[in-house]
Amino acid sequence: SRLHTCIRTRRTSFLCPNLEDMARLLFAFAALVGVAVAIEEATGSSICGDDPAKVPDCNHEDLGSCGNACCVVEVSLPAAPTEVYARVKEVLSSGIDGTFEYVTGGGPNPGDDLRPYKIDQPKPFQFILQGRHNAPQYKDEDGDILDFNIAAHGSGSSLRMFSLSRVHGALGDAGQNFKSLSFLLKNTQLAISTDFTIVHGCGKAIGVSTAVSEGAATAELSVIAGVPVSTLSFMALASMALAGTAAFVTGRSRAARTVRACA
Image (cartoon, rainbow, N blue to C red; front, side, top):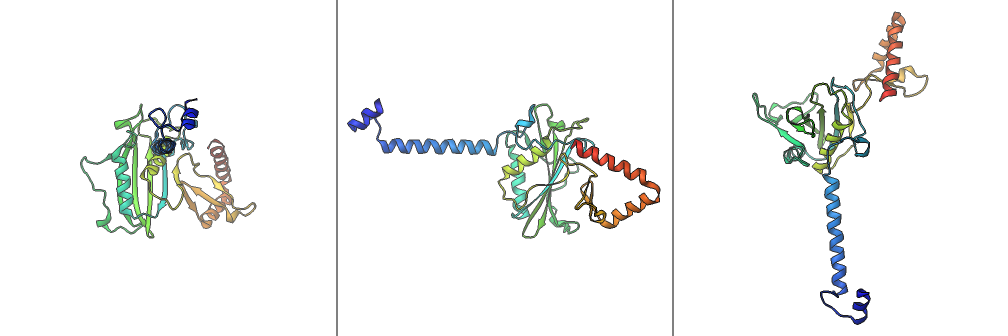
C-alpha cells in the first residue's frame, strides 16, 4: 500500500506526509469532532416533537395541572443571584436553538430587578423575568410562557422556573414544559447544588398521600398541590371522617389511587 511504501522508503511529500504530522492531524481532527459533539449535546433541539419517548427530558408529560398543562421546578445554585439572572436572561435573549425569547416591554413594563423593594418574606427575592418558548405549531402569541424568579439562598441562589402551555385547550404537553426548562438551565452552564425539585405539574400527581411507614397514620405525609400537610391537619381530616364524612375520605382515597395509576 502507499502507506507501507512511504514507511519503507521514508519519503516525505504531499502523498507521503511525515508520520508525526499525520499524528498531529489525526489528534486535531479528533478534537474538532469532540467539540462538535459537545456543542450538539449542549444545544441540540428543545422540541419534544412527534416522538417524545426518543427525546431526552421529555418524560414528564403533564395533564392539566394549571388548567392547561404546566411545570414548576426549583433548583439551588452556588452562583450569586446577579450571575444567575444574567445567565438566564442571556440564554433567553440568544434564542439558543431559535425557539426561546426574552420578554419585556408593554404597558405597564415593570423591571426585572426586585432588590430595591427589599423583599425578605417568604423569600429574599432578587430578580424576576419572563420568556417564551416557541414550537413549530405553537409560537409567538401561542408560544409557551416561561416565568422565572431568583432569590438569595445562603451564599448562592434559588431559581424557580415555570412553563405553561399557552394555546387554549392544551390539556397535555407531551413533556414539553419540563423539557423547555431543563434545556434552558443546561445551556446557562451554571453549576447546580441540587437536582430539579418538581414543585407542581410536570406530570406530578396532585393530592396524593404517601405513607412513610405502614400502620402509622400520624406519620403519613399528605401532599396537596405540592404543599406538605402537617400531622395536625391530617388528624383534623381523620376527625372529619369520624364525624360522618367517611364517604368523602373514601372517595378522595379512590381519586388519589386513580391519579397515581395514571401518572
